[in-house]
Image 1 (spheres, rainbow, N blue to C red):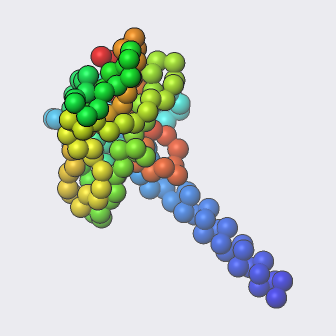
Image 2: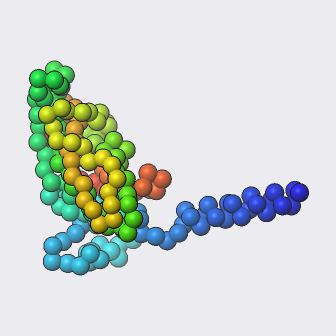
Length: 182
């Protein structure tokens, strides 16, 4: 009985290790997509020794692993509307994003779980709902399908530089980062 239990535990650990190191390219670190290149062309593809994460700009389309193609389309601020107002000294930062499912299976995206906004000191900003803003990019996306929406954060008026991070797989290391300036 002891031997069978040890064997089951050993096989379970081996399966978990293989799943963690499956060699797939579904990493969270993105690569820029250029209009004139194929989907696999990337200037930095051979640079595996550099631990620095590349930052992208608003308007750049980024391929994240083999699952998502993400574009931060635009950024604007808002003072809210008759139903929602930021606290005194704050404004709403609205970030228009588009995601395309590159995989062959349905995927789920969550604006609150997959995206994080931080200020220049690393402070995480609170995700918020602004009634006058377009819908958030949340839900299921069919294979080859797209979803677009607006991320909303309440931010201080005194801060002008942010980073927006996207993580495709919450259990995997890495992230794709855009620099946001208002």
